[in-house]
Length: 258
Image: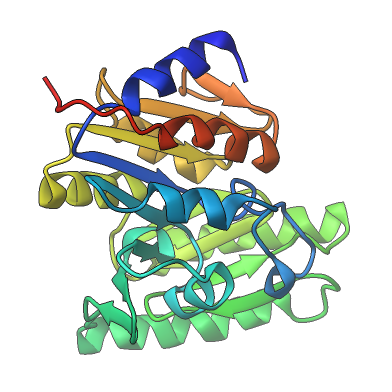
């Protein structure tokens, strides 16, 4: 963590209301070959639990489907979950999830079924390529595939998205095709407006997180986790370094936003 980031987080820690929004995979949890085994790094849960409340809202903003994100993240009550790149949203309660209902038109439901069948054909016969179904999208994963199969599958998925999708996201080893328009940036804007947040802190690692960075204003804080080109002005090396940075937001000396 750079001195500039440390001093900025120290300053932001005293601002209220504050929204701390974070990607999950590659940001709080290391990237793994089997997504079902993904877990937050040590200390992440404690930091997020310490942040939530007292004028601080904590949200996970992920490409994962909501059920998957909820099962893996184990977030404390009162925090927000945004799944499927903004298409799904819920608030964690003591008794489960308080969800916003996602409704598809008949035409969208038909397109989603067609997308699923076509994506299955893309994966067929290509070792390491697999398809994930979400309530509003299908996802072609290529992380376990050889380079030739991965490239071919992603190219075909992108063409499929141009033909049938309302939104296409091309991230690290993944192409997601949605029948609803959604983005992490729009999800951040909606949360900011709803919560009246004076400042937003957002951290992410993937190219899809750049849309969230684009939504941030000059007083907000954007943190890129890991390597790669980014518009974020701050960067940390890995999830462990991000958790260390987030600890700076848990100071007890707060002041109201100017």
